[in-house]
Amino acid sequence: MGGGTIRNAWYVAAWHHELPGGAERAPLARTLLGEPVVLFRQEDGTPAALEDRCPHRRLPLSMGTVVGDRLQCGYHGFTLDGTGRCVRIPGQDSIPEAARVRAYPVVEKWRWIWVWMGDPALADERAIPDVSLNDCPDWAVTEGDPLLVAGHYQLVVDNLMDGSHVSFVHKSTLGTDDVADIPVRAERVGESVRMVRWILDRPPAPLYAALGGFEGNVDRWQIITFTPPSTVVVDMGSAAAGTGAPEGDRSRGVELRSFNLITPETDRSCFYFYTHVRNFALTDEQVDKRVKSLFREAFLEDKTVIEGVQRGNERFPDSPRVDAAFDRAPMMVRRIVDRIAGREAAAPSRALAAE
Ligand code: FES
Ligand SMILES: [Fe+2]
Image (cartoon, rainbow, N blue to C red; front, side):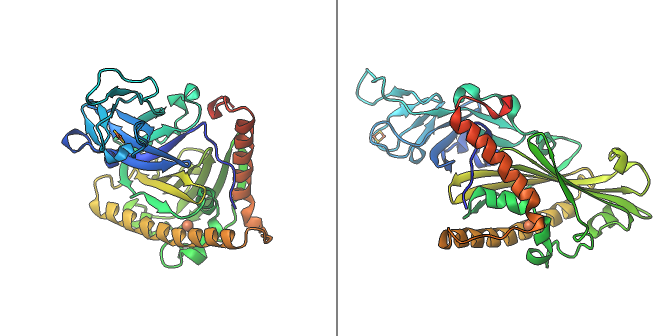
């Protein structure tokens, strides 16, 4: 099933390293919310994002080359600047006003390149989801390789907001956790949905047992938060039992947090960007490797079922779907997104940030 898509929002278009700087500068083609976009770095490293179409004969600009601060078409050399204006046509001095393409607001922040696909007048950098820990010296970062998923982006969000699939989909990776059956309540906080699970005074989970230096039992938490348009933060941690973590003092614990940012590519595909940050074993390469491979494997398991559900939705678009109790959180999320997308369709100049 499809679902609403919010346009007036920042979406991750690429990891910073997918757009190398210096001598390696090259355009990157990426379809975002159904629109072909070309990304490139200007001379000072600032990213630019343009409609991926040469105003001359519509060759994708991404097939061209970056020259100085500009993008030069690979066919006859029309050259466009970062604002989308053509500044050079070989063999003539005058440049028609129509020789321009759409430029998208773009910002590089916290290791990601963010693009605003809605009304440019509303693009406010402060509305970028807070993933500052992805670029913070006190936290180690394990960058996940982006996944292209052949499924509607909300299927990925559904999956992240639904813990009940863990024992079935992730039997061999994450599913051995004995707390998966402890129920969680989903609650709405403004336009966010939060699921909180505390497991008090129990032995630490394997990943933390060795690394957290715990001698006895721990208080464990799993806090999953959705914020529009499609950000899911999963915060998993442990602190020595009775040290105040459930009352809000999680500072003495060890914590692993994943940021999941889903960007629609088309109505039936999306980019899944994720990263894991942690405040323990900061320079331990073994932990890096373990985190990277464990979650990679688990996400590939998710990708397989999400793509299966997409095929099911396309084959049986009109058949009924029966909901279960554990669908509550994903359905809360869909209602929020649909409501914002509906409002936006009615009044395209209203920004998510101003809600
Ligand atoms: S198609 Fe781009 S310059 Fe001709
Ligand atoms: Fe999963």
